[in-house]
Length: 234
Image 1 (cartoon, rainbow, N blue to C red):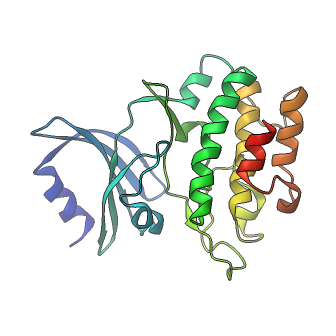
Image 2: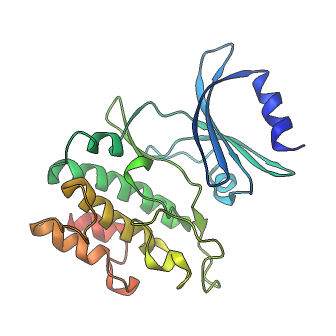
């Protein structure tokens, strides 16, 4: 069965509410169960994303639940929890974060990254659009499209993915990206939350600036070693 056929089968039970994204060989839909009215997210990829199979039915308060995955002839379909809330990117459209507000969000992202890194998963696409603040104030890290499972024997990433400006240098083929790639992106994220721009344009002042500089060192060995260490220094 191919993706189009599976999508038609899913439409028998679910109606498409809207297209959330259509880029990088990935279509994302918000769909709604015709009987229960429950919203979920359907992700359709042109090539398999192994991390979704790895995380199926694994629970973490700062991750959306992965309900099911389908490996198909021409790609993969993932059914995922729909998170209702506002992204950090949307918040930044109307202003900047205080250090205290940014610290709360970065700390929660450190918690979920600690969980992912401990099972050898690197997110590789930490950015404001991929962080949702729910109506109850919980923080959710979404979009595992660029994620990879770290393998010690690999010398470099086989696929270059991530968002320019947030992606670490090693994600562009210089070496294999590991947990320190996410630490680099967290430094960029913290600076953008505080100043609205990349640290190359304006570095946040005070303690935050020192943390950001440590996170964004070109040499991964000069960054914080773990997200736990970063969180401690916040």
